[in-house]
Length: 173
Image (tube, rainbow, N blue to C red):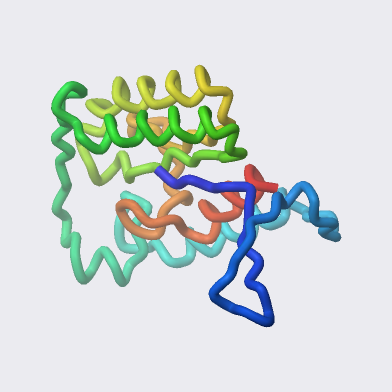
């Protein structure tokens, strides 16, 4: 899960230890139009070029060094015992209570490598419900079903490829 806050810190030039936050909404930012379709297509092609020795969508170098035909297994933690989930829910409540402007990314896992990704779907749904109830925008890139998983999103089993980062960038902008 990635958290994106819509604030940035300005350092006081005369005293760099003093910082103030300023909302991005207050800052005029010139953004040139982005051809997302072109970026998605080109970056997806680059991922495909880097994946020629496996059907999992994992870059050849990573696959050769770490995977070697193996599969991973995800073991979900029961919600009542999941400290990270409880902490995340507390963070969402805190951000809402402070009227923070935040967006969230629910990161994918490689559903072709992790054979039981669907076991995490209830947890992801719970997280989506929390975010929706707090009116925070979020992008859910998690897909537990291997048949629906987009192999181009990740470079390996859990880290974004350029294609995945462009999806995040488009959401943020």
